[in-house]
Amino acid sequence: MIRSEYKEMNTEPLINEMVSLCLEVPPELAQEIASREDAISYLRDILQNEKCWNHGGPGDAWAPYHVIHILPLIKTKEALELLFETMRDETDLLGDWITESTPTLLAAFGESAIERLKEHVLDETLDLYIRGSIETALNVIAHQHPDKKEEIKDFLSKLLEDTNDPTFAAFLIDELLSFKDPNLLPQVRKAFEDGKIDTEVISRYDVDWVFNLPEEEQSYSKFMKSPLEHFSRENISYIKKISYIESKTPKKGNMKKIGRNDPCPCGSGKKYKKCCMKM
Image 1 (spheres, rainbow, N blue to C red):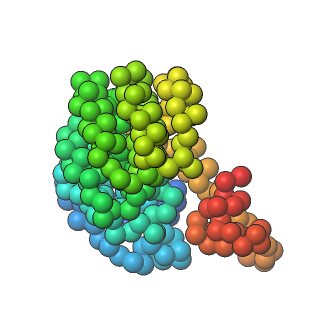
Image 2 (image 1 turned 90 degrees about the vertical axis):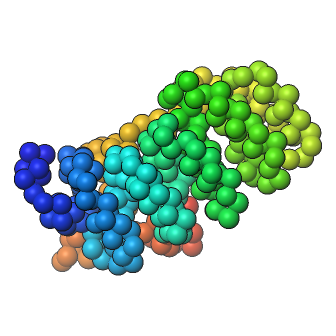
Image 3 (image 1 turned 135 degrees about the vertical axis):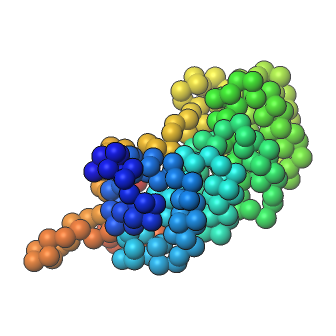
């Protein structure tokens, strides 16, 4: 179906179409949903419906992941708050999507989200990896909007000065080094000298190497993309490949989904996301 046909549909049937397509939602449908002023209530219903998160439920558990990629296309304050709410309440269900996708999603809200992102990154009740994703999102915005770079750099520098969490501090080191500001190096080295950094995450010997990495190899750079790329044919094909295996039952010949947190079918005893999913 082409986007002009989607335009003829009311919002509820559009949402139902998205859910019925399971994983294979086209970007045109995502864009059309994002353009509807009344879409947010339907998207909220999906995120708050436990059945939508379950394999075998509506959309085979893919609808919530599509929704979190549609919210940044809407770009409103309400959409941002709904994304934050989902990140907080569904941390376990989102799993690795927290670190793999949310920096892109949060950064896509742009300059208008900076103050809210600052407020949330200071919230120590949030999961550590959510806070790390917010740090990265701020870094992405800084590099997408050069006029905001000094403001965000100073904010992250102050965070490093104030935090007592060594893992959170290690995340901050990685973000700060990407600014390639030599004036930050004394602060970074002092943080290591003071024992403030979790050296399992980043060691003092990595500092010069990370500082000198070209922009395209800095860790934040992989998040400088549109949330719409989630719906690209290439990405959907990749997700399908790593998330489904062919059934060994010849009569059915169907596909069986492996949940990211399910036991790996290779028998290793590890979760799928920590084992063969990475291959």
